[in-house]
Length: 140
Image 1 (cartoon, rainbow, N blue to C red):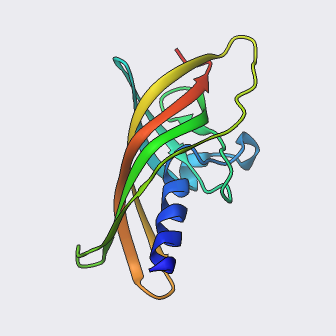
Image 2: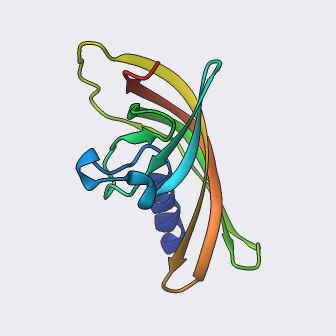
């Protein structure tokens, strides 16, 4: 059970707001796709693993960068290759020091993301996550 909970945490970080720095090149070549809904605005962003750190997500339709500063409760569902539910987990959320930068605004958003991967013991896995996130961005 511990392994499954650790996998849930890893999956959650892989999906939401955990991205690579822009120096890695095209982030869409490396990560998952997540839909952010911030009020009446919707953004499609790509994210990549950040070893448990809050790192940016990149808007696929512009040069917008979304920096997560807090996650609310998040739910993750992991399925095997035959679409059997392996587990569902809920993470209570976390925050980091937001800092202040001129020209950035803070948005309260919800997200929905999907993922695929390989677990050494379980084989091919896939699933989805959803929850809330507070982001900083210059995106309009």
